[in-house]
Amino acid sequence: MKKNSSIPAYESAMGRDGLRLTPQRRQVYEVLMDKRDHPTATEVFLRAQKRMPSISLATVYNCLETMVGNGLVKAVHVDRAPTRFCANLREHGHFHCAGCGQISDIEFSDSREQGWTLPAGFLVTQHDVSLRGLCSECATSVKTASAKDSPSKDSKKRPVSQQLQHLKK
Ligand SMILES: [Zn+2]
Ligand SMILES: [Zn+2]
Image (tube, rainbow, N blue to C red):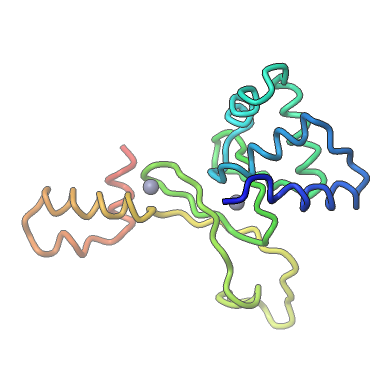
């Protein structure tokens, strides 16, 4: 993977909107591009601090806020949990795993209208979709666990909603 390959995108976006590429903003943006696991502001701060020990949490908050306002970074809201941040500029949705809490980017296929039943004449201009479920790893461990729980063949056919309830508490 080429390091810093994302920075030209940042610079062009900044140039377009007249937002200066300060060293702090650069660090915050690089943190988000380096590991796309949708970190919280605190996680971004801890990672940025390793590269720039002088950076403060308040500065990280400011940078994130500016970049979200600028459309360069997406704020991802998950229930009552702290906001997470995402630097994927392509239009995408988020998949939230109920097992491990991981948030993954998901791509849309074809047109924005596909897969929805919209009233006649409605036109979608923006997607903000989040899906919940289990990532492949968690889905596999649920299958394994339920196979152990009950030797009956039907256990494999348990609906996902029941598997999720099983996971919750
Ligand atoms: Zn994302
Ligand atoms: Zn998972």
